[in-house]
Length: 380
Image 1 (cartoon, rainbow, N blue to C red):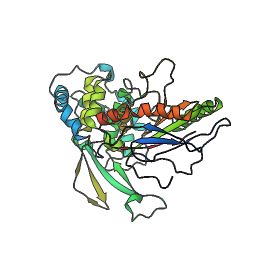
Image 2: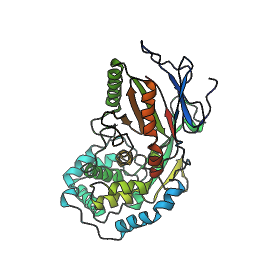
Image 3: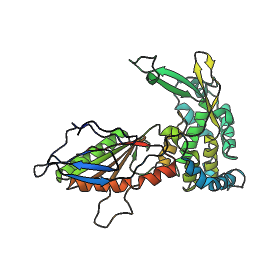
Image 4: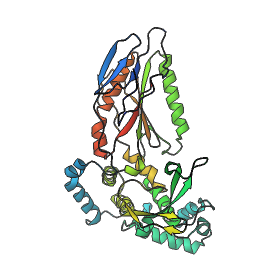
């Protein structure tokens, strides 16, 4: 086989990767040989080419240029409706109460840093009832007009060296964004309201309450064991989106929010929450000049996982593209990673079913403004 050719999208398992073999037949080993096809080469020397489409938009923090060209008028209309047209008032039961706010404040850890506004979590936990009521009025005053305060959109980035690594190398430094704890309190209160209307798809774990990544792994292992007991092969495709949280397209996210049952007033709050954010970097006691953030969900915010899960909610499967007798692929979403699993009594048929999903991905990636992704093809 020789060395694997470098490809900006695909990263496949090494040629020496061990694969399971059935007693009745040999399992072909899938490798990317380059060009426009994925070749299935069996130990007997035969091969079966499976054509694929390239999924390789320009790598950028912003959506591809054609996205802007095709949707400029639409987004102008969307933003005009949010910021200039009168919206239905927020129902009374969606406003924050002092009792609920006090519970949220008491959940804060006492040891959180007090930057960037020098208000620590310990100070918030010791607020008297009168101060809680006053803060509650401020929070509800944000919900009414849908304007997220500009001061709360500024993050302060500090760097922490990774344990056991050389701190002089950039890749061994972990950036941490510090946000206002008062802002985080409001975000927690807002999150409780969003969860009344937004439910991540059932394949999503970790971002769903009571669904950890461990449970997702158990689900996958159970599926693989069940399929193996039926003497079927499984082709798994693992997708890795580089800097996924940092490349969420704001306009696309708001468009998806407008397609949900979320009240427009709360959508307006989220739009304001994402707009005009900035950060500065702290080195010792020196702060850099602020820099704008034009894409992505904010690091350190409790709203970010929920918004990212919504942004990923329409990732395609074969549902709606199958005959009655065909099985859909299995989709697993855990944090910001995704995986597809297709099973069949023949490995090449399982790979072809995966390929049908990949034929749907380019349009989804383009519409979402995603950059290139990396995929790995293990065979079980």
